[in-house]
Length: 153
Ligand SMILES: [Zn+2]
Image (cartoon, rainbow, N blue to C red):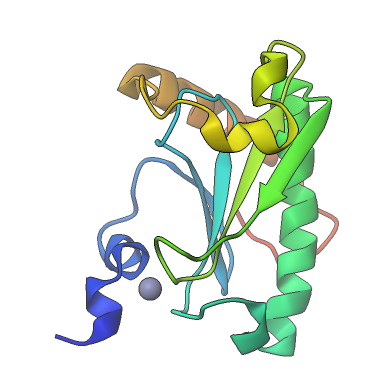
């Protein structure tokens, strides 16, 4: 078994298209996070097992920029977030993925900014909530197509 097949992100991408996938491109998959109960918390994952964009091609880097813009726009439309946090750490899973998290007016001050790192993982979103929010995101995507032709839902 190669290292790639043991990586949880690679493994998930090899499996059937999961329900939480919102959109995908040649280089990236965007799915809703199941780590917390934050609605609209999306994760952009590289299809290839690369640590970060320094290992990406120029096309992947350019595609990432356009995709991030689209994903942030989607999140803002869905949640009306005042801020949208983005970060990539690569510590727990060294496969390039970026957390894109809406910070809405209702998020307690304690969790704002760097405080988001201590946001509780439990309770996670219920499956029905997840299905509902994914449905809304796909609808928003369909009704507001991206300017870039490289991105396909
Ligand atoms: Zn991987």
